[in-house]
Amino acid sequence: MSSAALHPAGRSALEPVPKLGVGLLYNPSLPEFLRERRDTFDYVEVIPEMFWTDLGPEAEGPRFVELEGWVAMLDWLVTQCPVVAHNIGLSLGSADGFEPAYATHIEEWNRRYGFAWHSDHLSFVRVRTSDGHDHNAGLAVPVPYDHEILDLVASRIEIVQREVAAPFLLENSVSFIDLPEQELTEPAFLNGVASRTGCRLLLDLHNVYVNARNHGFDALAFVEELQLDHVGEIHIAGGSELAGMYTDSHAGPCPEPVWELLEWVVPRAPNLGGITFEFHDSYYAVLKADGIARELARARDIWARSHPR
Image 1 (cartoon, helix red, strand yellow):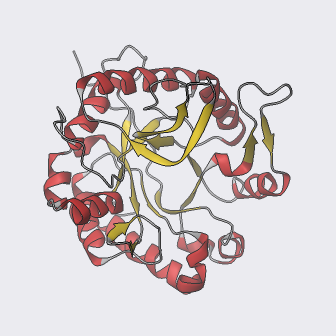
Image 2 (spheres, one colour):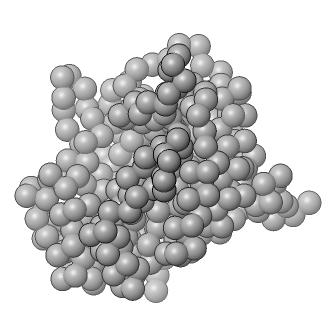
């Protein structure tokens, strides 16, 4: 059977994503930069949950209430460049509480805005308590890397793929604790999910660097274990020290080890569609417009060596 053989979700084993180039993750500090520095980026990634208020599945009226000013910005943005979606609400690893209706809403936005692809994290954010109510954990909680959870996550990705027409990418997580006696390494888990569902991987190199620093492993060995033909997008970012840990705080420019990983990965990821620079809006005062442009230019140089015009 060819490499385009279909999985149960009806997706190709190597579903292509468009080759967009270099982009940045939208935050509230960026409207002026996006208008005045259009030549520095090829696309913008947005977190759709920032553009609506989710009143929950038990809401009596409309569940997703759009934030008018934010949506107006997105309406303008899609006229200027390609847009990709990076969700934080699917909660693929929740033991309970996964909602196909959430994916249905993402597809409504995909039809409206034409996302080049969409993604979410290998983690969970929703926790169902004994009173039957869902609570948001406030951060992306990583899953155990075992075969049972791989089956669970893969089955949910297949639901998302059936609901949303755009290609789906799964992002590797940050973990601040080691779970004992796991059956799989994180790269083996990611490889398994991608092979089973045909989804792409969103390889967050700063997340890899964070975990390598905090847990004492070799970041390059981690990415060498990945099947890089599944990588559709790469995230790069900066971080900071907090209480003896190095955190994925998106604090300013990328550290040099992240650039070194990017240099190594890009020419080895034949289906890569884009490199996305992330920073938190509170660090705009540190970076300023010229600093953002420098990060994007450095990423564009690495991209261009493997993707000549």
